[in-house]
Amino acid sequence: MSRFLRNLLFASTAAAMLGGAAQAQLLGGGALPLGALPVPTANLPVVGPIVQNVLEQPEARQAVSPTLDSVAGLPETIAESGATSLLDLRQLRLEQLVRDNRAELDVDDKSQPARRGVLIAVEPDPRSIELATAAGFRPIADFADPVLAIRTVEFAVPPGMNLRSAMKLLQRAAPGMQADFDHVFEPAGGALLPMQAALASSAFLASGRILGMVDGGVASHPSLAGASIEQNGFAGAPRPTGHGTAVASLLVGNQAPFHGAAVGARLYVADVYGGSRAAGSATMIAKALGWLAAKRPQVINISLVGPPNKLVARAIAAVQARGIEIVAAVGNDGPAAPPQYPASYPGVIAVTAVDAGGHALPEAGKPLHLDFAAPGADMAAALPGSGYARVRGTSFAAPLAAARLLAAGSVQRLAAEARPGRGRLGRGIVCEECRVDPRAVRAK
Image 1 (tube, rainbow, N blue to C red):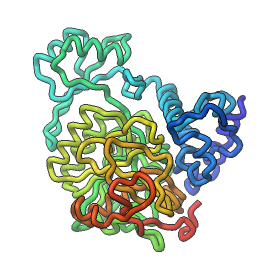
Image 2: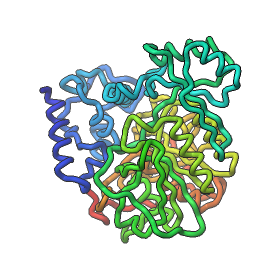
Image 3: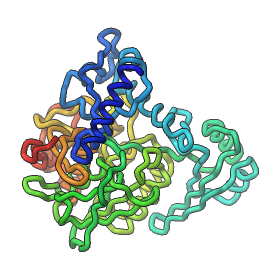
Image 4: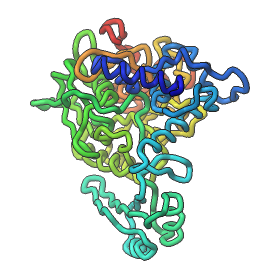
């Protein structure tokens, strides 16, 4: 067994033994001992940040370690793998995700993960459906969202055909169809491993402000005991995750001295993973947005990233047309990574992250537009069950910005609150006071 795999196995075993209190569970299912891994020192790319530069910053390792932990079967070292930038690590992570879930996932023409054997069409006309069926595509699902007024038809691709070939065939057979892959979206930092913890729930409904979030499920935690939370699953029953729990706590958690940025708001949680990293697809996100829109939230937080997708774009636009603001994280794969969605869609409030000194995180992505920054490092968030973890990433900045937008009532008022910082921060930093010092809650 390679040293890399031995380290990974050791870290995963240790995390399992530590249970819900382990920071590693929130940040990737096992904290890889990154300091022991050699990194390349020559022929480094001009674009960055390079792996070495990030690993030299101890706190930054928290954001990168989920990427490394999810890449198994690599050569002995990162250097031997050929990864010299966060962009390289991103590609390795996506490739590993598909390898680990071959029965559920394939890739599109840009190597982005998508549901295997399925293509989707948005608002297809009857003639296009006939043409697609005649070409060997079998309709397997037809869903009309009653709230967003979007019809989606799922087609099984012809037997033995991969997604890339199937899309080319479908475009030739039915050129008027708005077809796309059912892309899979990832959390913008942290882990989606299902946790052995109860789901957070509430026996009462708060009045007034309403928030929504599309993420993994939220576990019970003392800081959420008094919160008004309702959860619904779109990939099976909702399952508690570290990522979803952390995001929810940053929104509505309240256990002195820890506090979320929107304490007292009513929170609706749409779990699009059901405990599976192979879930979180465009169709699930669209259905989740329809359910959330029916609850009439003022703001929806999406700390997920993925490629452009016609169905997600349509669903986002339909939600916005109802006067609901959408806040999204820009991702943590470095500025050289392609723009991530939904943060890069028009009108979506794109959020990056800063550390305690107001510096933009070097691993933060570069969207087509950037609106605000919020704390996303040197801070604590809830762990499933009990306790707190140190968290880092744009995933955790987005809910803070969403909470402040809810309180401000408009993007213009939020912009008036923004303060300058260092780096590419859009209109500035919001919710600076929302960061909870990890030492104050003895975060692990």
